[in-house]
Image 1: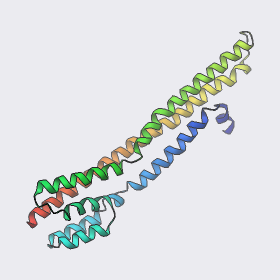
Image 2 (image 1 turned 180 degrees about the vertical axis):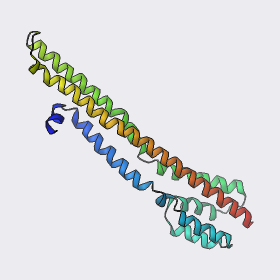
Image 3 (image 1 turned 120 degrees about the vertical axis):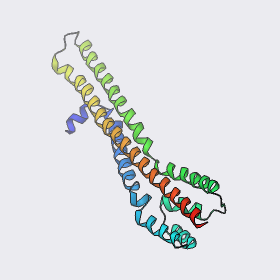
Image 4 (image 1 turned 30 degrees about the horizontal axis):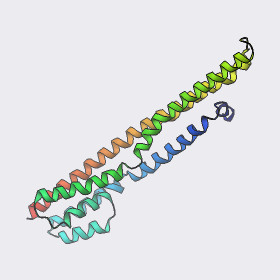
Length: 202
């Protein structure tokens, strides 16, 4: 296996680095985008129970105590001096955009890796073919298979490595974007429920 990777030539180094970065980003975002770390259901149940009991101050204190995305969004509405639904909704959307950007942090890196890794593989393929033709030229156009094997191997290995990094990176990117969208829907729903609860409270 090691010999196969070495046969890919110098292009294998950036491809290897990209694979490590992709794994690190995916695992970090997978951990950060847990529902319990963004919009824990137990927190929301407790918060709306307090609002139903007519205890908005306790609900605000609960938001300040819980450091997750949904608590920061709802805290902005509960602590806002605005009283109209439109003003509160605008405040929620303002904070929500900031939290959405935080959820999407690092995800574009996977998209970039998904694009760059196959291109690096293609670059390695071109270099391998150059090596092959140079071997043919050095032997006066009659090079044997042994002299050509190095260049052909480099061309195939780098293409394979680039695709092996790029394809999972595309899948990971799509998966994380779908998870971000699902969490943003949860945050939006929580915000609307809060607006309804505050409206009912008068």
